[in-house]
Length: 94
Image 1 (cartoon, rainbow, N blue to C red):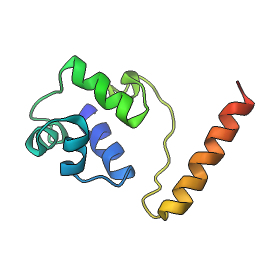
Image 2: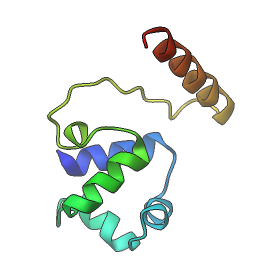
Image 3: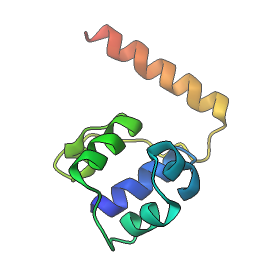
């Protein structure tokens, strides 16, 4: 499930494997291997992936059931508006 969660987050954020690899300081092949369940990221890399996508390691490992929206059909501007709305709602509850 870790492999699927990494791929889903990458796609939902509109990133290619090459772009994600660059952000994380690894090779494209490394990202491909994670997504194809050939290898697992190290604990340090798992934390880095979680921080990059702003999710918990529990979510990545399928231990957390938070909901995530598929925004792949929205424009960048619409995604930005949604992110701002979510931030506003989070601030209401803090």
